[in-house]
Image 1 (cartoon, rainbow, N blue to C red):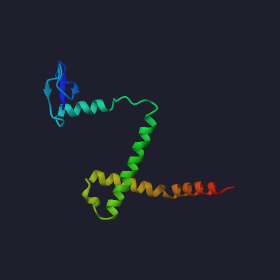
Image 2: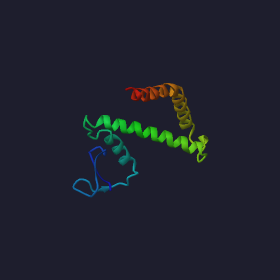
Image 3: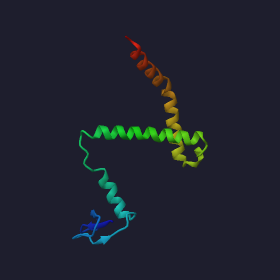
Image 4: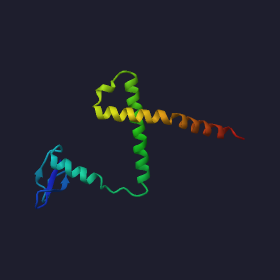
Length: 120
């Protein structure tokens, strides 16, 4: 994979696992034409409207996992902040400051939830 089908202007129209009619040209997966086709078409994959909230929530949950993993690696000195590119360092620090500023609010909400469960 992939075998590509091109239009008259040379743009990739389709990608196939195996050679088929109109798709006899093999390109490596790293070829710029294949990469461009994949980027354009992955965003257009059909996701039902019922699945979209679940996908969004899954993305948000995974972001939190990556944040926690990054914090663990930094805390244990397995990676250093300076190991990341400057743009990534800025994003990590901005996110950490934002989480810190929200910490008292989220703790209050967490405590409120626990207090409600204690009510008769």
